[in-house]
Length: 210
Image (tube, rainbow, N blue to C red):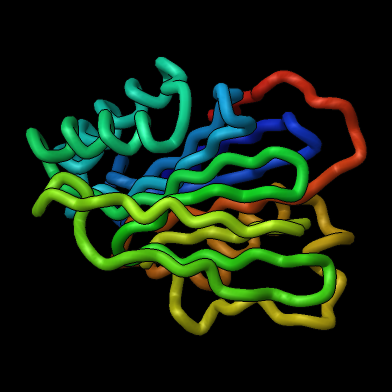
């Protein structure tokens, strides 16, 4: 089972993510991505319907859209929706970060939380499948964000970030994603986890780890 990684840094934030296919398959339909866009550091978590090579090919097509660095999350959503309608639908999280402001769209069976530094709160999404019935994306915004966790439905619902624990702030970001994936990943499903955390460093370059 191959685990893929993607990390990014910019706009005062660091992002770490990892994903893997379901047990017994070499590839799957989950992926994460991040880049600098016109409205800040843009990041995505995608869960294509199904598993295996067909889901992987659909996910590759969606990743090519993100590699072209769409200007903002609304434009990126429209392009992803058009591509997904021709192949397979997907659940999707698209977000952008500038300072402590998060703008995002979250559709389907994806869960997300944000933290102000004092506690975790759920991010509100919308039902549906991107690429299925035409959707009007609900772009939401929260202020004062210090940390973010997003995961696909391949992560057991028993995972909920706990308040009052320093693990999120004291642990290495990539270690957090790997631990969530290992402890809560469902073997029979593709699974993905993305963690974002504010940092004091100057924005750096995007890094892709295979």
